[in-house]
Image (cartoon, rainbow over all chains, first blue to last red; front, side, top):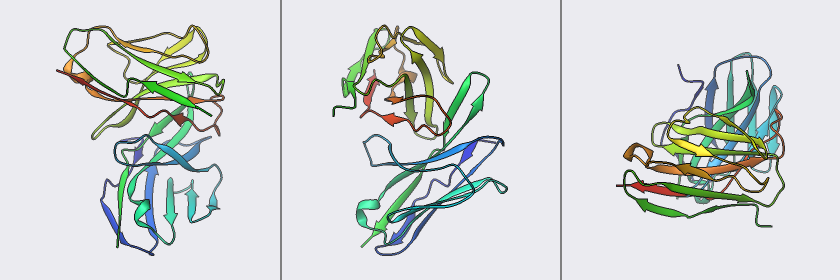
Length: 113
Length: 114
């Protein structure tokens, strides 16, 4: 089983709708969670981080974390065509030599006009 | 604010050649990382460095060499390139490697080995 799992998509949503991106992870203990956006041919760009159970909102983005169920999600409200990208979930946790950031393979989001 | 820059952006070379990818950051971040990104695998850590002259292996280090003589530079060398090393390579940095510290990425180098 992979450490961080995401549905590869594509997830298609109409413009103005809410896009919901999900990520499940393995391992317990101290962990932090990050969402990166990656446009085609570009580098990953940090958009959200979350460390505690619950919701964290930043503009149109909301990250949700449920450690008991081991999932983290990203909601994008009022989706725009410019939100079309691949969204990478990343989990950071301690290993023998320090903290390690593990990425999922990403979910492709398409926002349609 | 230049941030983190990688060069070259694109590189084509042949099997058996040595190739070096450059990474330079202006943030004075302690930690620097090299990842490769391949379809179906996501981002995988090759090597990382905690400070000048301190480097350590990541998940897929075989065939790669790194050095860090200065805090701001972290070059990645493929000593004898193989076709399996065709990939997109990203350099990243973070101020520390604390649990809540995110990593920030350079624009990447697209490497093709023929």
